[in-house]
Length: 216
Ligand SMILES: [Fe+2]
Image (tube, rainbow, N blue to C red; front, side):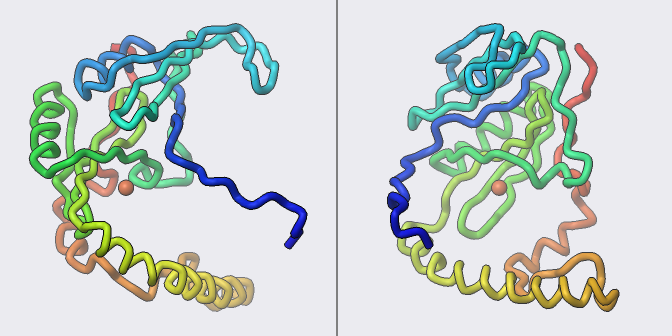
């Protein structure tokens, strides 16, 4: 390690997460009118400040209670971001915290009333969640914490050991795969959610359905 390098600085919180929007007003309606996140900031320009490239955009931000943002770019072409071709739809997602399970229930009712398909409440033991897609195909999760800070701290003490165990098994698996002696995918040695297998047949493998890509 290079001892001349500065120490890692304290990274405080999410500032913003940004994604492509098919249409600014469609996205505003979803985040502001349905989810209740106020539109708080907008930047419009012809050139991208970080790269200098020409790409006219409307960049707009919705504010969460802690002062962080979820933000979007409308590139003026009514095109949605394509889903990842090699990643299941449930993998890439962003989760926001709410205070109580009752707020999850209320949001589920509110979303369903607006025609949004919702999965959950799903019990993750340490927190409970609902899942749904925004108009741009982003999988969103709202989570209410169940475990207290002490329980989270206790569990955190196992995290590195378990990750290292996984990494060691992967190294063996990679070597065996080169020799053609092992399956394409490695499975964890632990199963923290054995009850999920029983629910598997009742839920679509994609989770909640992503929105239609039509312009309506
Ligand atoms: Fe999640």
